[in-house]
Image 1 (cartoon, rainbow, N blue to C red):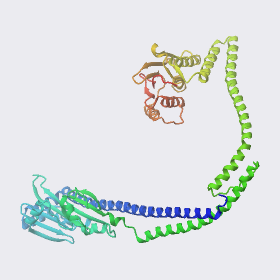
Image 2 (cartoon, rainbow, N blue to C red):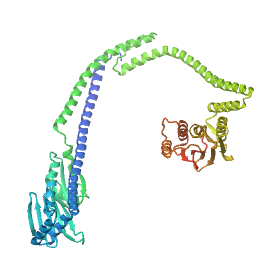
Image 3 (cartoon, helix red, strand yellow):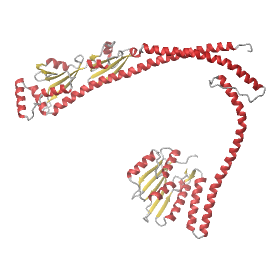
Image 4 (tube, rainbow, N blue to C red):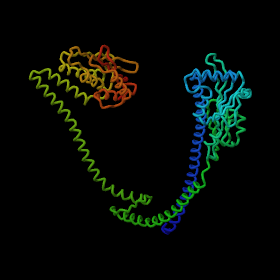
Length: 570
């Protein structure tokens, strides 16, 4: 080991790091290329779904247009009557009918089939043709934009086409609406609205070499496509809705009798541009070259630092514990060794000081604990001295009040967190007795609890804040018939405390808001802090199924129901 030269360590580390750097850069390059391909495919899949939805939206828009025009026809009695006359009369008879109707009307325009068609083409210029078919006469009249009309042609062919559910006009969407006589409900004719659609779906996929759109009728008959779709024939043979073209994603949208298919070629959609590929590969190569340069500089510095560390360790072996090694910010293993060595030396000095400071802190804690015991005892003794002074002066009521207050204060600080119901009711009784002196003769109280529940344990101080809330907000000081009662009973889920008073009560909206806050365990800075505190403590100990509910008391006042669970271990 002594004969090994630093150069050997340099070469070993250099080639090891180069191999690792090459593997990492190659893996990262492959990962980013695959991620780019994956993101490109995902983005184009979303775009393909969007194209299919947009095509479906166009079909829906055309259908809505037809429904609107058809409903407008039925809203205008003169237009509908003219259409029915046009379907059932000979040309001469219809001409005479329309002239008579126009002469009898007060409008400047005759609201007939021609006006209906004119307005339709003006409002929806993309509509190609409207055909009015008379079933009785088997004649069809075609209306085209620019007021071009081809009247009274043979309609037998159109009738056969409409009777064929698979008939379509290539590249066009047709919407058929039956015309019924509103008086007899007999079908007199048919309105056929035709829209060109092939150019619209070609516009949607323009510039996309991975996506094609196709429109079928009744899942079988092809209406139009945006371009050539490889494998479409085999797909339609087995049913578009049941099989997918291999290597593609098919997105289907349904609008009335038409189905819109978006066919995405996964291979084409996954292709990334050569520019993006070269950019990722170029970045990887640049990172690798930079890594080789940095590794070379780092290892040269590393071998120089080895001698410095060995020299410092030799001084430690001589007993010099004050030696400190220089720690650089590179954070490599040698720096960790140097840092740990320096930290070990520093900790020897710090240990003495920390032990001394810990002893001082311990003494301070003991003093604070003693003080925390002295302060409550001082208060208890002071209250007792005042009580005895009041008794000596003959003021027994003040003495009783001070005694009750001392008991309540002592129970808050010293009693366990879990107490029997008997003790909780005693706290309330002490509190009520205090207020008997203040409101002497204007209120009474009752406490009712079954004997078998007195020793059941609950968390302390769940009733006193509610009783206190009554004296702060509910008591009617000007009246002499104030009452408050506390009732305890066993329920299926636990124990129910019901505090009922005949005080000022609460408005319904305010009560609903308060119940919602208590149910959702919300905390708001309001006047009822004690009630919210009790509710939060109950839910924290027993769960969300327990807590406080406010209701209107019978005859006025407020009823508060406090639900807690049965006794639990501390």
